[in-house]
Image (cartoon, helix red, strand yellow):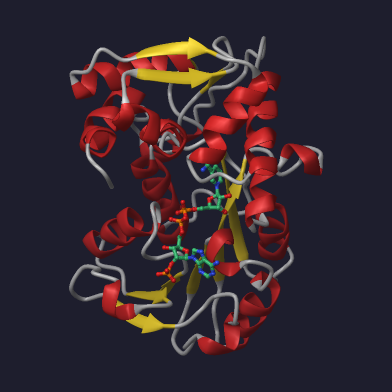
Length: 284
Ligand SMILES: NC(=O)c1ccc[n+]([C@@H]2O[C@H](COP(=O)([O-])OP(=O)(O)OC[C@H]3O[C@@H](n4cnc5c(N)ncnc54)[C@H](OP(=O)(O)O)[C@@H]3O)[C@@H](O)[C@H]2O)c1
């Protein structure tokens, strides 16, 4: 039985679909089972991963740890899981967990990716830590409101590049890590297949939506304002922009880990943009 935390989220849903297709038994943890809407056959249990005592662990052999769901409770959840006979943990971590703390802005939103990776490594269980680069989905969070309101996307760093990771690829690699031994004791850095600038990503979204979108450069502070009005707390927004600025001139933004794990190239941003085009044109 695979226990999935973060089951109803961006990565949890496609991961669970993969696991069910592979015939695995899945227990999905959610704070609200009535809203979970997960595939038939999945055992949906109420619980908050931040309160490990609230989670049914009988029969659990493997655990998928989503830092956003688990908060600071990863060591305790894994201790309990091990007591119940679990053998493996797969942590969703991030590419920047070895960066200085001020370059880990998602910590300001309660994602303790570094500590969750560490808890997995120190758990005494077989472990894998998936160090993801930026999700392609971030473009929806950062730019969705601007694109729904007009044809201009404003940002401060038009030449910054990153290699957006498709959530379907991350889910597929997580399934591999849970179901096979191929990634054991590794911390693969997962990225998309191509390093793109923001204007290039906007062009892909324009093509997918059929809209005449364009990128406009604004100051750092104005870009922070836009991210804040998209719901990203100001300190975190400033941190994300600092990471963008850091990417100037970097050459090694793309890894081959997704292809290595899945035996096919990572999905391009154009695929992601086509999949999510409706969300850029109508209210989510
Ligand atoms: N965005 C990126 O570029 C990036 C890159 C690398 C790593 N990451 C990391 O990936 C993780 C996020 O993964 P994701 O996008 O799949 O997560 P997500 O969709 O935002 O959330 C997953 C689930 O966690 C539960 N959850 C959310 N907030 C919670 C809280 N305060 N307390 C308890 N449960 C909570 C919710 O489930 P229920 O409501 O059903 O309980 C939610 O559906 C974060 O740790 C992030 O730092 C992100």
